[in-house]
Length: 82
Image (tube, rainbow, N blue to C red; front, side):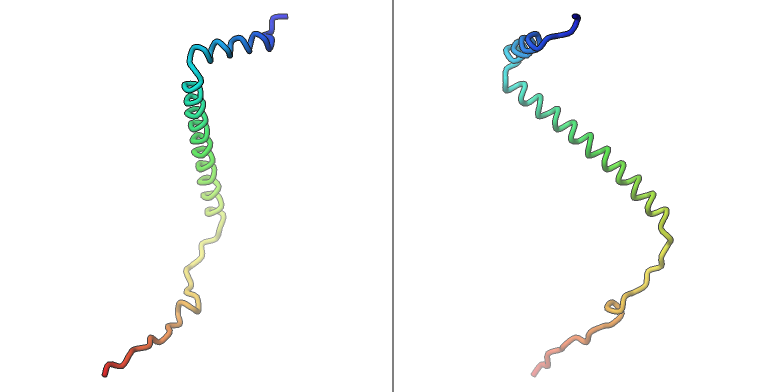
C-alpha cells in the first residue's frame, strides 16, 4: 500500500510544531490567509471591472437631462436689515 497513513501525518505535524513553534506557525498561517484573501479580492475586482465594462458597452448612450427638481430654483429668504 504505498500511501501515507494518518499516524505518519500526525508524526510529521508534531515534528513541524516542535521545530517551528506554535507562534511561528500561527503567524505563518495568518500571513498565508491574508495573501489568499488579497488574491481573491484582486481577482474579484478584475472580474467586477470586466463585468462593468461589458454592461456599460451594452447600454445605450443617454444624454443628461436635468430633473424637474434641479431646474426649479427655490427663492431664498433674505432677512431685512433695519
